Picture 1 (cartoon, protein in one colour):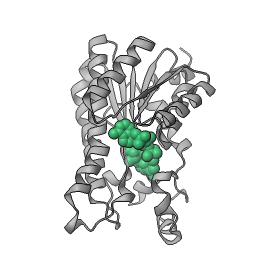
Picture 2 (picture 1 turned 90 degrees about the vertical axis):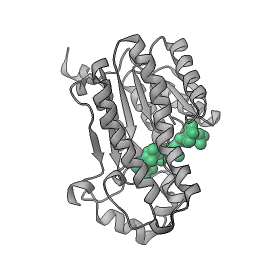
Picture 3 (picture 1 turned 120 degrees about the vertical axis):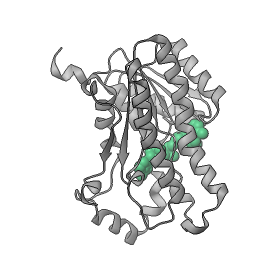
Picture 4 (picture 1 turned 180 degrees about the vertical axis):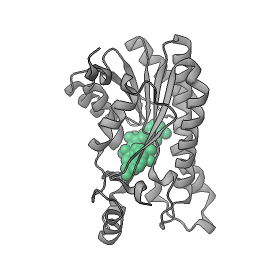
Length: 261
Ligand SMILES: NC(=O)c1ccc[n+]([C@@H]2O[C@H](COP(=O)([O-])OP(=O)(O)OC[C@H]3O[C@@H](n4cnc5c(N)ncnc54)[C@H](OP(=O)(O)O)[C@@H]3O)[C@@H](O)[C@H]2O)c1
């Protein structure tokens, strides 16, 4: 095998949960460009359809699947429909999550309703589709790859009312290590990427504050916030045979932020 072929996802099938989102749609397109056929799931059909258009533009086949990824029946159906259409499922990317900037509260009074919402949006939405996908991978016996979206907030505090989000992303990083440990016996690798701020609608209101953004950028050695395209190469790597001995890792994609803290 030529060395660059290690990065090819040709013949593989990926499910990008939350693939209609800013990061999810960039990753769906990137995995497609690397050769994967890609199913995209989310609650809003229109954004999933738009992501599938990006998959097709990248030269691959896509499938838009509407569903709430915190609901077991929806996740099971999405996996079944992916298998029905493409015949296999090798990769699941968990790109549902976020919400931090919408619910900023002092830690000492963080309201339970917002806490539960952030946990549901980030943790439950990662657990439910992963369980459905991994059950199918174990049954098929061909191994696979799981890629989670953690955040530098899984290891760094921030003085901005983020209690629930840091707890949720800490859980995602912990689950990445736990799942990698449990599912290695099935040839299923589990990794995560850990971005700092990525220029997306989720964080637009925070980054619109010039002082806040200047503070963020000043702490990032590469001198800028991330862009969705910065996440594509790391995602392809971690989902490909190039990372065949890499599992349980949380890869910082953060311009060097965590190296300096
Ligand atoms: N943006 C950043 O700066 C940044 C930094 C570090 C980590 N991250 C992480 O990266 C991930 C993606 O972030 P993003 O900026 O791309 O967010 P986004 O644009 O809001 O994308 C999230 C997607 O998830 C979907 N979704 C939400 N709840 C869902 C549910 N219950 N079932 C199915 N789909 C659901 C949303 O679509 P519907 O509402 O239509 O379902 C949306 O398409 C998150 O985990 C986030 O924490 C982001």
